[in-house]
Length: 177
Image (cartoon, rainbow, N blue to C red; front, side):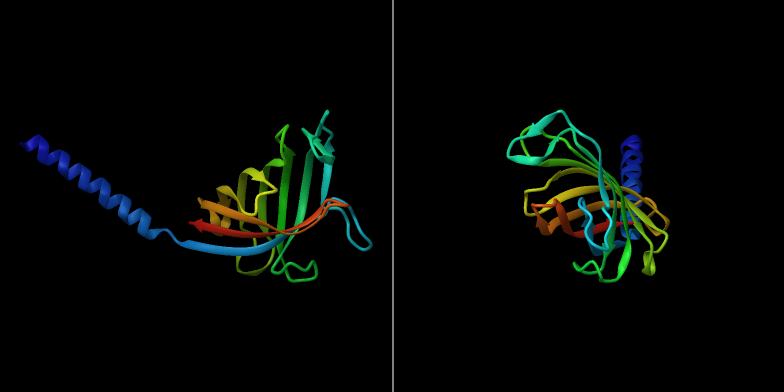
């Protein structure tokens, strides 16, 4: 009987510890727009550059190929207009990771350069099925005010220009820190 009581005490101690840790976490919602500019325009440089050209054309996609990799340094703004207040940069890469559909592997550091999160960053990595209305990508970490962050990002295409591959994405991030 003493062993059973000891086991119950240990279980209760673990549950209490989990409750304290879970209660201590702060939940944060962030919303911003990511400007992925593959083709430069007057007064605007490309922020996504193809660094690897894949060998196999993607079905129904005359621009991209399976294996194409783009390195990104995309502007992040408060609103969908490129002239709205800048909040940071999305730096990393995306890779055309499917032979049969427009699906990417996105790996990006969301680096905040203004506002109350200035100097902090969030790391995202996951599958981005770009033709889906809403895509969910996991948060795999963070730095500064987001050190130890967990959560997810919801990405929606706000606008896309098929003739030049430029896109503006709406990003909602839900973080536990």
